[in-house]
Image (cartoon, rainbow, N blue to C red; front, side, top):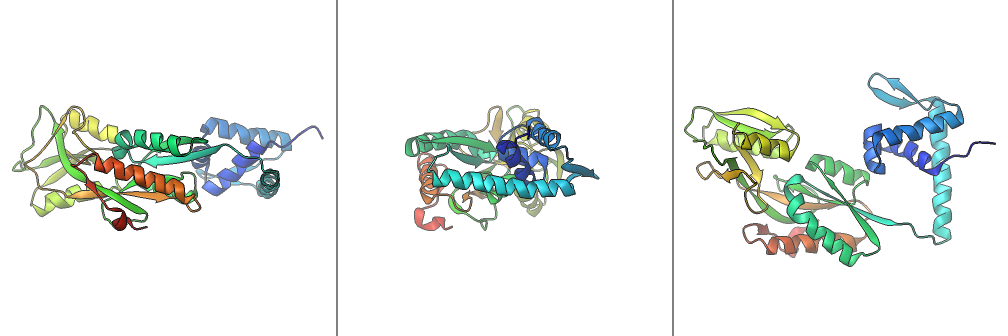
Length: 296
């Protein structure tokens, strides 16, 4: 036998099956998609079997692929169990997610707290939209995440509230008496976009979404260019090149929640909660939720 199975390649095959695709598996494995595809090519070359086939736009396991997947799970389980019996410790990584809105002010505080409380661990951060972070925490590829919850009914620990403010570029103003108000927003689905449209509609203000983006930086770029206004959570201070619009209806606030994957050690969750509480205490313009009100 001249060919040996590589454990990392087997873990990649398992990740593709569990995550439902190559892109999500690459994110879960923290490797690039080309590197992940190379793992599969090397497995196929060594085993002389085709493991995936294209069905429309989706890659599915072949019959041989299903057989190799079953063997991969057995091999990885035996390997990991042997390490546990031999008490071989593996490097610990804590993956923290955050929405773009809270990442810049909050994640440096999280890095300091995790390094101080868990010096043996290596923190890693992922920044994305709340819906994506919910999925990652559910799958276990992210350990904990700070997500927005405008409804106030979402899962996890409620740690505080961020005011929702209207922003325009510094050299443009928008009057609510204009015939049509131009809005720059996140692509749907987005609860803050829905809040903006409903608040303006309640005041009888006609709105046109003139630009949209999947990222915060894209929305900010549209507003800075003078394309329209945007409703955004504030974590303290206006973004560079923007100013608040005080002549538009109040839009309330959005909740910031901490969600954790199943099985995460409670001391890690508590460290994150304490860090978030300190973050809000140091910023009196934001709203801190007391420990007794956090809930799970």
